[in-house]
Image (cartoon, rainbow, N blue to C red; front, side, top):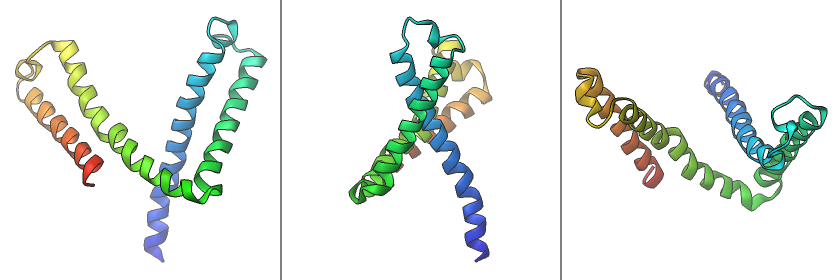
Amino acid sequence: ELYKKVSFSFMIPTLIFLGVLYASVSARFIFFRIFEGTRHKSSHTVVGWATWAGILAVTWVFAFIIAEVIPFFADLLALMSSLFDSFFGWIFWGVAYLRMRHADLGPGFYKKRGIRGWIGAVVNVFIIIVGFYFLTAG
C-alpha cells in the first residue's frame, strides 16, 4: 500500500507536466499557423486568448478520446509513447548538447574544454546510445 502511494506521488506530477507540455507545443503550432501575420499572434487580444483556450480545450478533448474512449487507441498510445518518448527524452538532448557545443566552440570542442569536454561528450554519446536502446530493444 505504501509502495503504491509513493509511486503515484512521482507519477501524477510527471504525467500532468508532460500532458501540459505536449498540449502547449501542439496548440502553439496551430495558433501560430492560424494567426500568422496578424496582431493576435503577438498582442494580448480577446480573440487571441479565446482561440488559445479553445485550441487547448480541443486538444485535451481529442487526446482524451484517443487515449480512453476508443479501446484500440490505448494500445496505440502506449506504442507511440514508447517510440517518441525515447527520442524526445534521450536522443534529442544528447544530440542537442553535442550540436550546441560544436556550434559554440567549433570542431573538436571536447579537446578545447579539457576533461570537462571529454566527459560531456562521452556522457552525451552514452545518453544517445541509451535512447537508441530504449527505442529498439527497450
